[in-house]
Image 1 (spheres, helix red, strand yellow):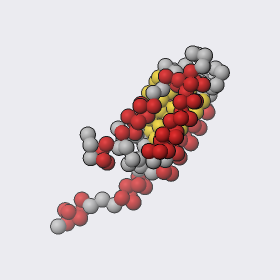
Image 2 (cartoon, one colour):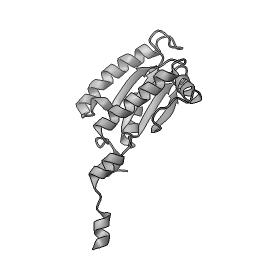
Image 3 (cartoon, rainbow, N blue to C red):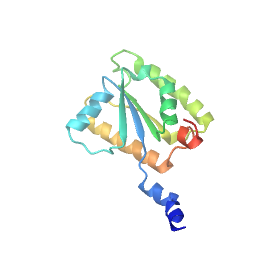
Image 4 (tube, rainbow, N blue to C red):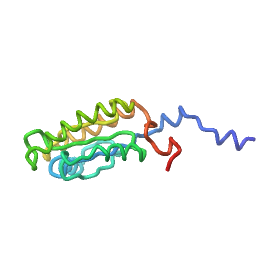
Length: 157
């Protein structure tokens, strides 16, 4: 009987130790270089971010965001070049429009506002990158774990 009681989890204590899993889709030319600068400069930011380098934020497919959420990510960051500084001329403008439309779909699906973030970080802004990561981590931590699309929670593989 004592073994069964020790198996019972206390969700409140787990939430206290919980760290969000954040996936960051970063533009190869600016945001990824900003992340590299933050690392080389030994700037402090939360370590629970996994980076995926993409050619341009304009090439970011919203299906990637949904797939990351289904795979257990608690938060998503998409970051690209500042408007007007895109190496592909207008990719970040496309990304901004696509993301504005995608937000309405996420709202319809019941995904909380603070789970998905979009930012502009240039290659010379390592400190800004560290700030953005800290802000995103705190916002996602305040919301709590994601259960909406997570396959494990929904009982699917």
